[in-house]
Image 1 (tube, helix red, strand yellow):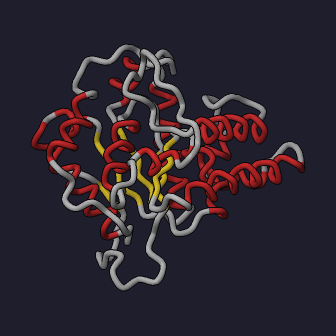
Image 2 (spheres, helix red, strand yellow):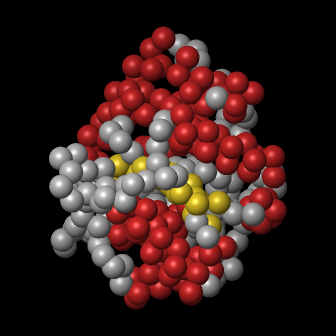
Length: 258
């Protein structure tokens, strides 16, 4: 089954400040694009396009042969997270410092250049300001597992969703072929969510592969968002919508570029 941090299920009704911000993070090749697409479909308010729920007016990261259905990521978010990891650590997104792995919030105290934090905050505020015009929203980038601590002061009561998949399957699906990186990203995501006091649900890639377990997990995800006080949820998510979103992941996928 799914695993979620404890929430008192009151829903958004009667709340003055319902939650409207959802972060999807974890390890690549774990169903994060699919999970984000399902969340976005649940967040449609009225007749708005569910695309604005995950990218606002920002440019989408282009799809490619590794993910023809699209990454459901804002290009500027991905660029900013790459640049932040590089600016803070002096290394790439696959290299972890031991202190950052055990305590992701240490990233906040590790800026190499004094101007780095100010530049990050200016860019992040612009992105979040746009997304807030399309609330409730979901932002996805696996690298939030590393950068959530520097985003967290700019967020308001976010919820976190961490897709997960067997490490052997992730390694065989990725050009990195690395179980170590799976361990580091999953550990970092869980620790970052806990440090941020972010109510969190773990979403299983394998459960999306069969119709019954996929429908069950979609209902559990909807319940998590509802209990997390997210307003404007589509309820219930139509079976045809769920099936359309799940169709892509049931096809054999080529090796991911990561």
